Length: 453
Image (cartoon, rainbow, N blue to C red; front, side, top):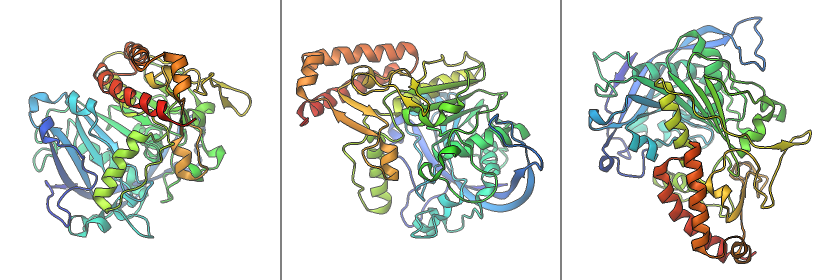
């Protein structure tokens, strides 16, 4: 295994997917590195059953050469480092890489963040109109190569070892000498499915990571063999919610919105001293706030500004994820597990989400936008297409309903603040997010008040 870097230059002069904000002003440095070597490929052990229990058994099948990149954000001052590396399995469903390591918890909490390119589509793109790294900047990334996703699991492990506490520091050190205690692996959506397979089949072969967080996870692991990327709309309904996460020797969390709670309903598993599930009512896979950031990055990278769907769900997930990471980091470091939370209520044989008089899901984690609403936010899509199925919906209440519920904007903000404080006490929101969310809530109230109903 060889590491090169920091990598600079290229056609664009910056690393693909880098933050929009100024990391230097926040006490962070961003650097990119290349990692090359041979990746082990795996197959199911002949005769073993890959069933719902997650007790999957894999064995080495062969090896493949690879060369990939890792993008690192780390505190400039080593004294500001909290000892934890958050390592992301970059999402490639779109045919280019999606990741987000510039949240308030990461930058304010002193974490190091590593975005790992481990799948073929992220490096090479899709065959038609490729947008992967090698097509986007052949000068910078042209030598990168991942022949097949079959190598992705070991590439991920190799990146984890390269930034972990026992990494080889005789050559290039991506973390510049930081004293790492723990590495937490995270993956969202498509990457959560890949990470589920890593947890169930690869982690038992040798520990690399000290904790796992599967975000917006549809309840189904990815295959060990083959390159097909299964997006949620293409998965047969039976394929969703087909396996649980096996009992581990390290902490693991599933952090879902309302949408994935529906998919995972049939494979819910009880919280333990090594596993916790969170489900948030009123939320969905992609919120408007996330889409705004993605659109700005897309415009910077590709020169096109995508259209923002105004009717999509407007409950931001980043504060929710930050609270979960805050809890998981302390758990991994020897603290108590995150508090168990209520799960979303379902009824019927299908089953269906139980909704209140405002159309908002009952049960689950009550973020303030769901507990003191100005609109019906839900996972119910406004369009049947694949993007629409992930974006959910937002239906403003309008002036008459807002006045009946809250009287005035000041009355509403008082109730929102009370709901936010309840979320902070429950451990599902951080105190640092209350102020910014109150400002957003005031804007959402005015938006809803002005809406034609």
